[in-house]
Length: 307
Image 1 (cartoon, rainbow, N blue to C red):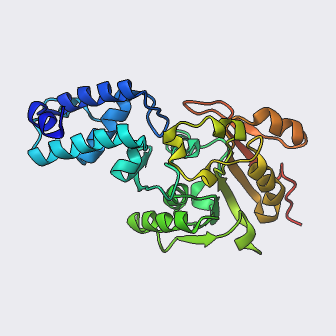
Image 2 (cartoon, one colour):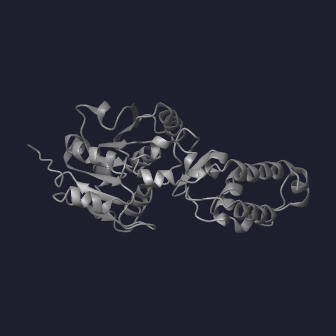
Image 3 (cartoon, rainbow, N blue to C red):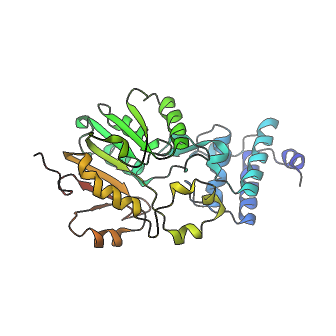
């Protein structure tokens, strides 16, 4: 079926959703960039392409589409199948808890559990049981910021804080700059190019946020095209996935205030980390998809004192 045939025969959003699911299943696409099934991925691609709410498919299913909209959807469905790029790269947007960010091939598609944790802890009825009082936080750093999404969220959750954000990739920081500007937090967020804490000499923080590369080499070797489309350096955590996490743990005490702490996403390395750092009191945080992919550790547990 040609593109002209598709746009002539398919007229409603329901038509394109059904067609996209069939194409995605036939092509055996992979997911994991904010969606987990062909149906969810198709819904995201279609709704975001049309600037519709990405979590509200049902109200629009039987809406008839304009010719230009039909052509756009047909082109993006075809591109998703033939290029195997994540849908977020095709629409140029990704979301954390409904907050929209610009993304492209210069950055990994944001999908951090930390965003979920910030929302659930700070927007819950009783506040957080371990994260600091948001109004008392004066300084935050986001290590391996990528697209800048967690730095932007930090600026929103900690309105009194100066937020520093660091990444080794100059390309990623260009995307982060776009997101900082779009969310109107340029006066609050400072971007640094460098290796982990290297650009931050002499600075100390109330909170360290970090979602570093943590994929081990065996997993990297088995990556499907959707994940290979992302910058490899944003995934590569070394032989066992924990190279950068180790460095961050060792250096973090030099950059934390005594009452501060760190939240860190590590993927699946809990057992290795606990065996190598038996003296550290990790608090493992539960999310919708994991019970041990993110830890919290206080400055006190890291040996930071006020002396």
